[in-house]
Amino acid sequence: MKFVDEVTIQVSSGTGGNGIVAFRREKFVPMGGPAGGDGGRGGDLIFEATDDLTTLYELSFTRIYNAENGVNGQQKNMAGANGKDLTVKVPVGTLIYDLETGRLLVDMDHKGQREIIAKGGRGGWGNARFATPVRRTPRIAEKGEPGKALQLRLELKLLADVGLVGLPNAGKSTFLRSVSNARPKVADYPFTTLTPCLGIVKPEGLASFCMADIPGLIEGAHSGSGLGTQFLKHIERTRVLLHLIDVSQLDMENITHNYDIIMAELREFSEELAGKPVIVAANKMDLPDSRELFPDFKEALEKRGIKVFAVSGATREGVDELLKFICTMLKDLRAPTLVAPNEEEKLYEYLEPFVIEEDGDGCWLVTGSEIERLVAMTDFTNDEAVAVFRQKIKKMGFIDELATLDASDEDIFSIGEMEFEYREFFD
Image (tube, rainbow, N blue to C red; front, side, top):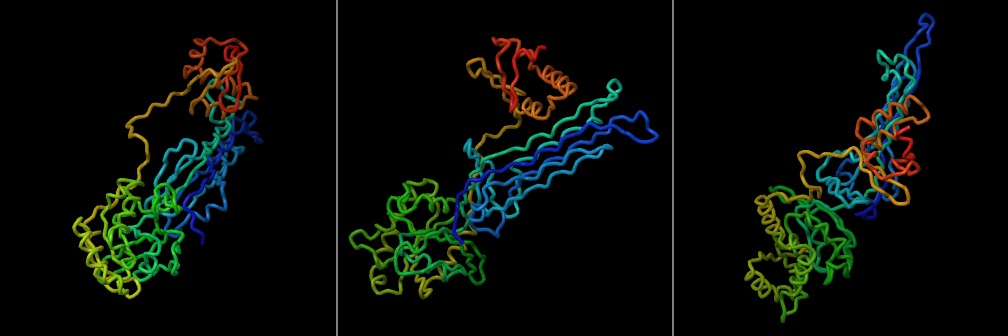
């Protein structure tokens, strides 16, 4: 399966069903009252995090997701059926952004998490709802509330305890194969691994943990070289970095050069990333050159306070000792801080019912969820419905606000998908 870690999709919740106008017409009920049922609620658009997926590949085939609309109301006060919710499954670690605003909506950071991204529209009321002692035979019904449509950007950041980093051909894939059931491709050339790979490590007698093999980074990775930025983000949420270095390829004149390249790239990408705990594994110790260079390499790094282990992914030399140390380290570390929605916490949020802005050339734009919903749910072909609409906008202060504007009778006011002339509000 192809590894895909970013997709854009279009989603929408279901529109509510329309309420209807109906009256009882039964044999022994000559003066039957209103009996129009309400429309059903539109289905919600829900995202669910699952361990069954490790990539956004499947979502790249279908880019439009629509929940079911509610069913219109029926006679005899029967409400329409609610629309079915649509659940979209994504891998754990998926970030969901509003494509238009760039705002993070939710971080799907644990298995089984379910979030309603777009709530279904309310069903419109049937005429039975509008009956009063004064208005006994109302001929008015509401249209269903429109569903909410969104353009989303989904970004996957792998969740792992340990991130395996290093230069190309450092032996990361071989190491991961030797300590877990993961089977990344292994070959004797750089950039063998082209996608991140997860493996569960289960040391004998110790707690298991998840390790992510990140494709080989190169100098300039933070600015995109070698697809660096595409892979660096996958280690942002790891708790420990395990830095594998091919000791056989070290330069005696600058024995820490390979280590410094990777750490510089991490620092350029994110100071937080570079500040994560680092363990260095001097790999390929089964080779004679490695055994010769290792003492000087270990001494240089331990002077900087960095723990160094001698290992061989091919023969498993030193691997058990390293894994035991990692388990101990993870036990003492706090869980990583996950990404939180980038909006300020608010105890109360006051939303204006409407905002009127001049759009030029005698045009005005009216926005606001309350007034837009009212317009969308009003049947403007029905005189009673229009009368109720006028009462509601007057009650919310819209008519008083219009009277203060420097507008002419022919000026056009756009509300949702409807346009009104200024004078229509005062007729």
